Length: 157
Image 1: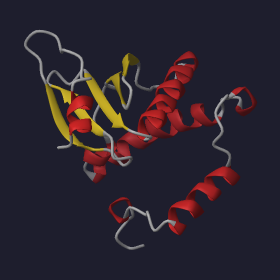
Image 2 (image 1 turned 30 degrees about the vertical axis):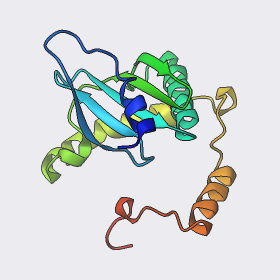
Image 3 (image 1 turned 135 degrees about the horizontal axis):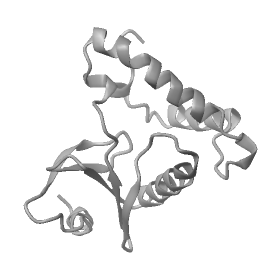
Image 4 (image 1 turned 180 degrees about the horizontal axis):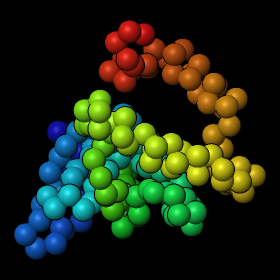
């Protein structure tokens, strides 16, 4: 682990007594992700240029909170010169990716309601740029840089 990565790890806040942070994976963005041992919170640490992207995630989550959409809540934001740590309240429930097919089928109505509510938010009031044209440009850039992460594509693609 680089010295910069070690410095970033120091951004993890001290958990409550009797709890600890457990590394669970790297996120799609390359962020390091931790789960608190009681399951009530997650922490994401980003270094370098990715710290600005993590700040954007923090801002989007905070903006979304006003609309009563099921989403994480920002517990803490710790920033340093070359890294940042975002601590989020865990969303209750089980990730859809961990459900067996029959249970996932039962969960779809709830998932669909949340997506419907999200898509009914007033787009003109959203301060974040994620329009389709800009997302196509972003995708073209990733492909041009040969930076497609094949682990996030379905095997049949």
